Length: 419
Image 1 (cartoon, one colour):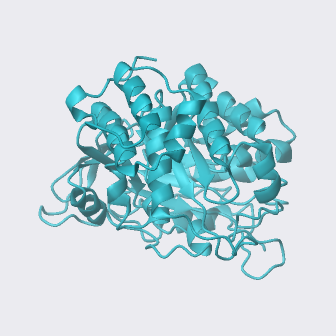
Image 2 (cartoon, rainbow, N blue to C red):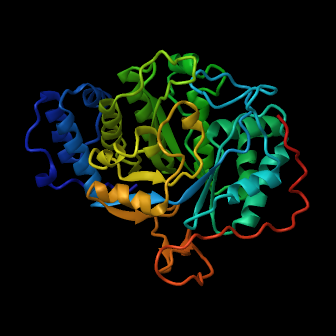
Image 3 (cartoon, rainbow, N blue to C red):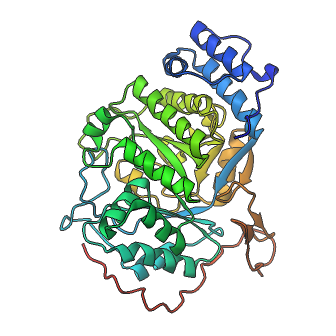
């Protein structure tokens, strides 16, 4: 991978109150890769402003004053899941009140409901459903692709890919290729949690281990499917386990270059077996983002997920190493099930307002971080390397962009919703 640009000397903090952080700053200025011990120094420094200034200098060297976001919609086809994850307040067991499964036609209709602002990406995640057949997953992707041509389908975490392969009794690589052929453009980064076995034995006992998660990501990357990657923090993990997680991400990125972005996820304890734990502090939120920006020298984008850290706080993160506020995330449900007090989704203009409140320049990106082109009414003309039919609405205030009509499709109702 090409060497990332170094921050200008004048952009670096003039002084640090923590000698350990000052030594890290010298390595950053020299373009040296940070070590495991350097990572510990980032998490343990009392000099929050020095840490933020250092991460911001690296962020601005890469992205200038841009603040990225995209217009996306979340789709959760089922919340039924056989895995007992202590970190999750969203999933349900079969027969438990609140559990649901959408038939393919229902899932496609749900994706179209509330369609606005010319959505350019659909983000698909769900539970590890105990009985859905393999063909449901490929069929859903094909139906979404047919209904929403040109819209990027970011579907299935590494944990889900592993489960779908088990359902189909197939090798994981064959499953990835099947899903890619059906319309899977990239994969979200959820389920990584903390890679350390000690932590996973507490928060997600029956989920695949960290090594399997990384292997699934590796197979995606070498087969032409890029992914994101996350880290869930603020529960039982130590500083050492956080740094280990970030270093393992960096090592795989060295090998494949397949990670599009890193998303730190603050643990929300409400409604989980760990409700006695305190919520993540703003101090820790900023430290994780800044440390990630400095340690992940081979990964372009570090995101501040406004759903998790709040609309008022997320713009601050754009000066602590983050360059992306993720997206409009219409109808987010998983974090809200654990007590998130943020909106379930924001509009495009609201996202731009958040970014401007930080003094950054909004950049509406597509899945490949290329600029989305819209006409004066707000209709999408180009995104995800596809040209769209120009809109006909009069210029002025951005117009709502309707989802395309549902085509006739003989397989849409082959899987009937059940709970």
